Image 1 (cartoon, rainbow, N blue to C red):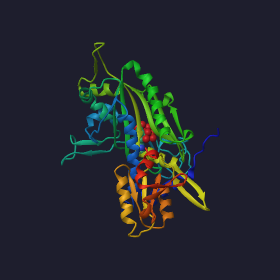
Image 2: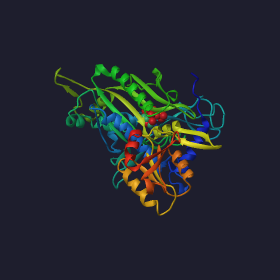
Image 3: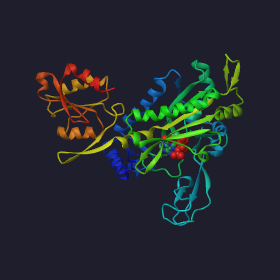
Image 4: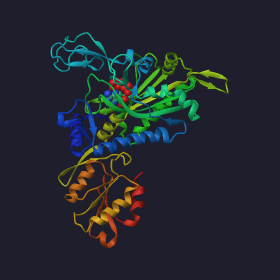
Length: 440
Ligand code: ATP
């Protein structure tokens, strides 16, 4: 098998497509744009929701041993004191004295060479830069009013561990899952939505008996790797990379990243870590509360160990876009098509009256009403039909349903398949069944 190679040109194609089709916009663009923040447009918001829904389905809905949580974003300093983020959640920052560019030391290919101007030995001594956004609550600024925007969702699961344990009737091994926004004052945001200061995470903390953590670590690495493959990521574009010992945090006895071959090379989509009892222990010590599990059968009290699969929703949606992008030549014309898994496709069906004639609109809207309760549908009646097909191809819509003048007579429509461009004539009373067989 030949090794896959990164495709640097794909990056600009996706950025352009995102802007052209309403997937992702630069935020505050009318004011010149606010660096490293992005807005998800009408198409992007659907893609992002579908990525999160698929994660939630596989991590919560399909499992009897995982429950959900939606914890607050604003949190008091005590949480971050206990978690270690106040002391340690920092990146080593260096400035180039030649060109003034600022870099994250741990991300440089060569720690002595400035990638901006190419000069060597011009860096300042590294400084630790804390990544948390701090603000204040209430009308008075100053000590006592300080709060933080969470830099990860995970602490919510640790802080609420006893509440969930006492109310959910779950016992280890069990997990708590959460999807939500996190904030990091990144030194070097970039690569479009790959690294931003405001982003969404999908994290799960799986609490296990201390002796079982190695088993569950292996289990979750495989589960999470498989999730990307099941949703259509090509096998050779995705890999699991085990961290070397010198990359591990002091409390972790194992961490592996799920990596995707981005246009600039392999990079992280998700980290799966065996965190031991570090987090619950820290909160137990700092809060003074009893945080532990009472194992009635063994008549023992212990602190569960934690396996954490931590993924980025926005970053993953970006990777699915990259993986789905395809161009092919059809009749001397280049057709761009997003070959997204139908579960991720923003719209499942587009209803298109052949022409914008009043005679077709009522029937086309009837078809839209027939399908809309079951599937997210688009409705578009302007432009030539060929151009409308191409637009739907570009946003990955699996099926286009065309209402034409014959429909008024035969109560049938033409259904066009995104990938093969094959067309079937399907009667309206069979349409739901036809689509249901082909869409999840
Ligand atoms: P990095 O080393 O790239 O800064 P990390 O290892 O600190 O990332 P984690 O703390 O493990 O990242 O966060 C879990 C996941 O959250 C990451 O795998 C990534 O998908 C996502 N994530 C983290 N930081 C960002 C960011 N600034 N923008 C977008 N997604 C992010």
